[in-house]
Length: 251
Ligand code: NAP
Image (cartoon, rainbow, N blue to C red):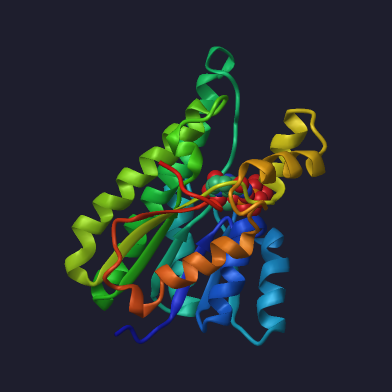
């Protein structure tokens, strides 16, 4: 088993990433809270340290290899070699296909796919050395197709293939890779979608809850709970899976 219990969570300044970071800290991990701006990570880091945990704010754009390399140097020096990686950083650049710019396509691919690739590439070195690791990638129900999200749905479907390949390549080193595909989770991201659609967020939540079998929208803690299971030692025989956390079944 691993000697260090260091976890990296990207996009952890807010939303799902912040909840996952706090949950993994409560589970006993030292947590690298990675986001574009280190200062924006203060809220998550303070919440963890106030609860008695250990966390480090790290500023890095996950789609920039030099920034990723520097982030790993800092994390290894300050917290120890990471054996858990949660690829959560994400952005939306929604538009119908005929209005979508090539820049908005590239930006979304850059953060979700290139970002997850770079983070996993730098993390696997430490995981294979430790003969232990857990990688969790944030996909989405949008991977099944969603109007106005040609870029995002392609990236989230791509992450599912990426996850299965990591599971195949890294399994013999004690490393598992799984994807969580959330449905509607109440965060700034879904609030921004409501704003773009010119619908009050409360109405958007109510409308969405009416379509969901468990009759509510998801909270970041729902995803944190699932991530906590997937990175646990006991989940070592679960790999290459996509777990839809959406309050009901998805195809
Ligand atoms: P969020 O509230 O918008 O948070 C995303 C975080 O990622 C932000 O702090 C953002 O920083 C950071 N980020 C963006 N680009 C980055 C980059 N290049 N490098 C490092 N950090 C970056 O989103 P969320 O709702 O928590 O979503 C988290 C993940 O779950 C995303 O991958 C999302 O696609 C996925 N997801 C969400 C939902 C949902 O309903 N909310 C559903 C399915 C999947 P800035 O604030 O500086 O931009």
